[in-house]
Length: 320
Length: 303
Image (tube, rainbow over the protein chains, first blue to last red):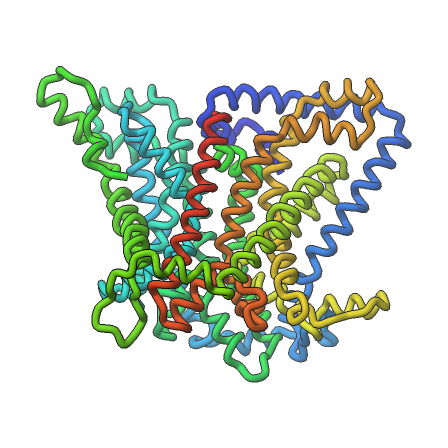
């Protein structure tokens, strides 16, 4: 669960260096050693006591995990059961019928494509803009960079939900309402503060020395950014990209407010119309669609958590 | 959040060419700043403006300035007071009591548990977190529904069951939010707990401190900054939950699970009172801003 367990890959080093507090690095490193050292004395404790403690922890953890798993179990079972009800029940004869039923343009492909366009476009915009903005913030000193970063951090925490009504009113007045690209731009802007903050911290982890070599060879800032820095902070940039995409993919409120035409709705909203308007809800098909809609983000999350460790992103980024 | 001020490196004396070049190198910050100004600062400014007008969705020539009318109206509106109370209940139950405590418990248990169990439990809890909000809302709707799984379990245990989404809607959505959000606290606390030096805990153990005493006098003080950060971020996230509640109850029955975001939406679109809805939104934004400032303070202490 923690980045500490991963060996000193470029990913881990860029990650741990990303914490802005320089003291945090050495602290993290020593904590790592301690974690390793801790394992030994514990094994030397009388086996019965250690084992008993471990068993108790295991049992408690399994109970909590089971409680968390029940709704997920419903999703899996119902998606495989044509006669699914609201209760968790293993299907009598598991079939993929529900999946084939929703496997149509109208129900699955159009909303998923809309989601992809909206979130892909938004993510691209966020990543490009935040990488560009992070460069001077990370490399040059100015008395305005600290206030800028503080403002960015402040904005990270503002509840975007609260400004959706004025955003809607603005979008109506500027004819941006019901356009995918307008929605993507807004999503990008709402994720930008966090993107800039993450990118800047990752970029701080890339030594300036390497870049100076490129400068002496006559590279411009753009060249040194794209050829030197970004390849070196590849894992960090990947985290920003995937994280932004996951957040946008799951966002319901923004497209729910800003998009109207059914053909343009992304999966997060189309699933809801499906759920809300059908007289008798076909739970099996709904579950199958939910599985299809959720799979991309689950896979993407596994991708970044494998690479950098789950606790890392929060430890390095959110905690400051 | 302005670009123009940023370009000056702030040193007197260098020749104009150097100053020019210094300014040019801040150019990459422009696209991000433009996006932020247009799509975030713009709406926030507009939010402040609309909150003082009587703007409506339809049938109005032009909105007029009404001063603090929207706000006085809000404080005299029983539905608004209801929404504030429900938001408080929702935040306290789901964020402060639920996610925070359960996250810490999970992190503590994970330190002691065997690797397999730790991995499985972590995967399940994180899966609930990564699922899109609307799917989570839908899953928890089926779980708490009268014909849903919770009642099936209660029947099996021969306990009395009830229609949760009707009798205790705010508690149901609070638990839904706990289900969805605990992974974040768990990750934060796992990271924090792994940084506590083992010697400290061990020497306390040798001095005869029991589990409860160690937790209260050693573990909690040592991770207090993580607790602060986590509480702050959880609360901010919980304040802006909309999709989950909308999917489960739509704020109902009546207004019994109508937290501030849902109330705001309801006023602006179902009652067509954009001005009033925005005034509520502004209050929500102010609460968020307040928490943000406290959060920045916490970070500054830490960095």
